[in-house]
Length: 87
Image (tube, rainbow, N blue to C red):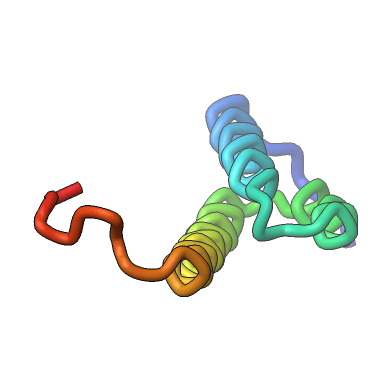
């Protein structure tokens, strides 16, 4: 299979999408091992739309991780010291 070079505009979009996905994958929800496994896939991908779909999935996963962390912390901390105060 012969790959066609990307136009400068497409190459810029792909480069930006890769950079954005890498930034999302730096979230603590993703282990260094997972980032390492993802790197060859995102480096080889030349479809900006696919990279952005992966970014969206990663954002959802990191949000779920944060929600789970907050719930765990709330369980560990117990009731608020000042329940009438709206934080």
